[in-house]
Length: 182
Ligand SMILES: Nc1nc2c(c(=O)[nH]1)N[C@@H](CN(C=O)c1ccc(C(=O)N[C@@H](CCC(=O)O)C(=O)O)cc1)CN2
Ligand SMILES: NCC(=O)N[C@@H]1O[C@H](COP(=O)([O-])[O-])[C@@H](O)[C@H]1O
Image (cartoon, rainbow, N blue to C red):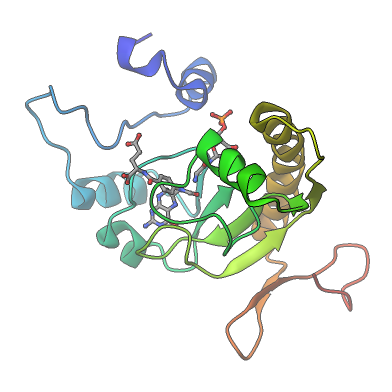
């Protein structure tokens, strides 16, 4: 195991399953700089169709967004547009939700555009914020929903059950009843 992968669960899992791993951006102490354009070439050569962000904490460069239109998703641990944007990640989000007195929170899955957390919202789930919640307790409640929601949305993506409303809002067609959307 390459040492720089030891702090990334997803990379460790991929390595164990024989799935190619690319670290981006390459750590600053490395001489060879791997550009966003290099990353696009690598992803296209690996025939990557979709990019799903989960806990990725750097700004996705415009070159990657242009190369993967309507194909990059992110999961954020609040009900966007609330508690999103630069500086809102991980436990910082849940602390801000609790400090605001909000009674509900939950995960948002959205398309990635060139700013943090401003892309089209695709799916959300709601969980209660309890009066005596710590940030850790709220984070665990939201994360439980995140893990279910990302699987549902990934299935819809792969089964081509995502359509776009005339006003540009993406909808997920129900697998059980194609006449239902959410
Ligand atoms: N082009 C985009 N890139 C990314 C998006 C996006 O919507 N568009 N989403 C983020 C994920 N994210 C929230 O869901 C998020 C991640 C990180 C930050 C942030 O403020 N980062 C800090 C640096 C943190 C660090 O390096 O430890 C910063 O930029 O100062 C905000 C939101 C992923 N990329
Ligand atoms: N704004 C981005 C952001 O805060 N993403 C959040 O980071 C956590 C990653 O969990 P993990 O480290 O267990 O995968 C998840 O809760 C995800 O929503």
